[in-house]
Image 1 (tube, rainbow, N blue to C red):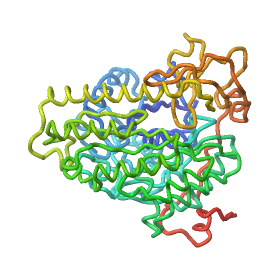
Image 2: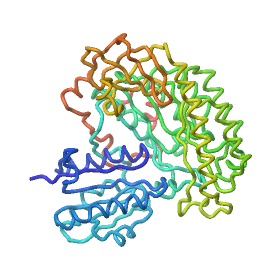
Image 3: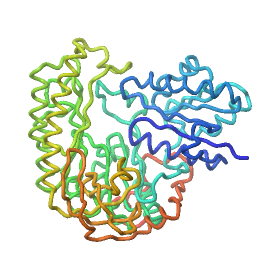
Image 4: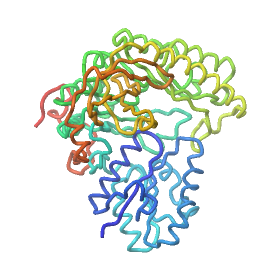
Length: 492
């Protein structure tokens, strides 16, 4: 009888995609995924951790503590911890939670099945942390969670040195996939019925630095737009320092690239940006947004903002509020600064009192809420195309609505009426009401297109998730024919 598994994922889209690879590896090794209602009874529980969020450590060890009685009563059960916190804490995890069986890092995801088997055979915890990427995750099998949307990594790691961020020390320096390998994966997904891909990287618009092509990301966007069957292309996250006009042109001129941009601001104060080592200033940031909106007038722009960075004054915070007013973000992910051990900012003087940070945070959230709501009210009366999703609307069963994303990334709740609409189908609706965080369309459907993705969702099947490449590291300088693929030239 095969052993069952469940994966608990914390953190960013990178971690979500890594969990798809972990699931693919386990299923290739003969494990079966535990049903959601039986997840607590799984034979193997994998934690894919994040080290960026505040109290990530406490959250992990709290969850491990809750599993201890189950592990005691079921000796055959195994617990594995991977991801960024595992890369950081290493053997400390087993010291604090000796009932953990496996600890693996961000650079050796591929080793998970072997480490589980070795831990069972040796009846001892296995801690294996690689110091550098051994196999690009996208060469590994995957259990894709969606039939209509897929993640595609174009790079891993980061070459920036932001003082608040621990990611470079945990994910390593940037390694770029070859353009032909990226496009091969995109083509496979589109051939399997996927309508939307999101290109992933810690800094997507520095893509190409490893093989010396500064224009590689813009070329890649255009090439993805030529993939048959692919209707939507998104990407996350860019860095303002590396954002260039050729990328904006590629977004504007490639119909499949969605009019959406997530552009982290972090602070509107030039002094704070300098202490963060963000290598751009507020006027440069706003100039990028102006250029984007000139080329893509309907672009929805979102951002990340940190409140209470060490030494932030009231004038610094006022500068952030000023940039937020001028930028008119459709939404923002706002965070209260918390020191992350191992980052330069954790040792900076003038750490702010919690009460001061909280009060500023609340002012920022109130301002952004006002801006978001005004932006969403401006959508009332517009006709939008929605890719229907599964699980996006928490209250859909109560309201008898379905939900999905417009091309600009806004969440839309709509009434299907009597139509048999499935996740993966595409509908057009007229927006009747704009709320602060979503749009509502309760009128009749203006159109409904049944898709192959909808057929697959109805049948309960998923994209194949076959790895692209030969299982070897697949990054670095591309061969000439592969490089041509990024310019739209067909590669066999």
